[in-house]
Image (cartoon, rainbow, N blue to C red):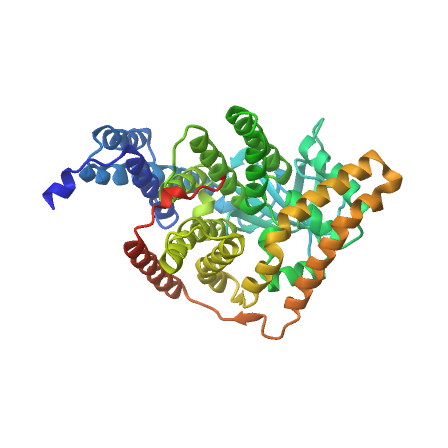
Length: 485
């Protein structure tokens, strides 16, 4: 035991353990806060402990890294909680707040406009986090990045929302100049795609390209949920990974530097177009760090990458660790694809590299298994046909993205021939919509089961034990997995 504690630990593992501690510290702040620990002194103490651990690089100094990370995380979470506590007395009162629209507006079943506001100002006080606002009627002209003032009764929030406001009355809407340029480019190109491809296929194609799910017809959106295919039409790591891999492989033939530059530009552009959602913040960081590691000839262990990205995202927005289901599902799916899937492939098939079909099957099954506890706990249902639907559709998504892009470019170049350019994309997208609807119509497509919190904990403990057992039998080097290769 003494020899183990004296062993040298690579600095990357010290950083990873510190990141785990940071995540734990942020999570703890949601349950209790000690005002005495939300001081600059405690922050400097946590940073100092982490630096000591990184400099010494011995196994037993991992405890320093864990403790330092927990202190920094608790400080960050406590700071956010203190700001939130300042607004607690306002719950239940009619107030006027001002915020920036952070995402595309939704329309609920009653026809009212639903907004997600950030950069909140309440009575000249800044409120961290976001507020969920439902207007008293539908207002179609509200866009992402608009600045809006609303009046209504502020209530306690949920998930990543610090507060909610229902039946709110808009007071003032301001649109900055030149506004959200990425949004205008997205809508401009989406309009060209819709000129070339009829609905609902055009909305599906646009969803593939830019993750714009909110314009999907209601019946298709519901079918995608039942078939377990929603992840391919939301701004997620899958869409981004396809684009980055394609750019890297194309431009690598010219130079490694150009491949990295173009791929990095795609990551920034894609996030600018889709907006910074919890899943996109995770996907963008994973893709960016993996691309940097590839450029410098290094390899990121998925566990280290997972810890770093989790810590960075909750450091920026502690609400992610306090109940954001999208963030949780994104990380669970990532762990399934990057950790569980390759270990399972090695356990059942040895060192033989999987083909496209076996890789997609393994990744789909793994992501489904690791996200199932969260889905059952949060929504009380899970798709039974997701594996089959993904096998028939997922391999064709890159081609669908390419054909949809070509249809949009063709419609912009020669508008009178738009339908000709869009016909190949329409055929493929029509196959996908029909396949999705077929699986959604199966009577046993969905299982409904509500889990308790302790059920989820037990299930993940069992899954971790299973992964450790398979890894122990195979000794698979997880550093060989990279999302951009």
